[in-house]
Amino acid sequence: MAINKVFGKSNNHIILKLILINMLTDLMIILVLALIQTNSLIICIYMIPYLIVEFLVIMLLAHHAQKDLLLTLNHGN
Image 1 (cartoon, rainbow, N blue to C red):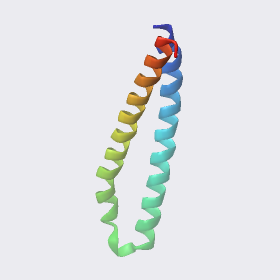
Image 2: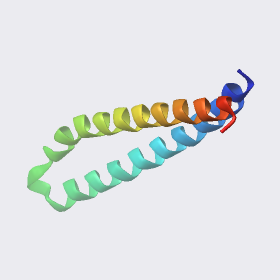
Image 3: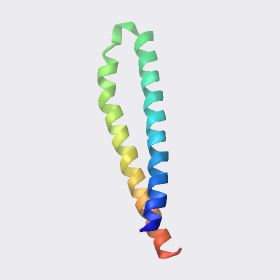
């Protein structure tokens, strides 16, 4: 239980930083592309589902990795 509290909080902080940096970088790239190609501002609308899916994939992979790490630490390996 103590391992989960220590590593879980630390990992959540790192994951949230990763998601924030990733989303901001993606949004900047999308905005630059939309500004360069002024006739295709619709790209912003199509990229919103992409950002949502990317967020969900990162969260699922992080949860799976954290669960495996905690199982390994709890078994003493």
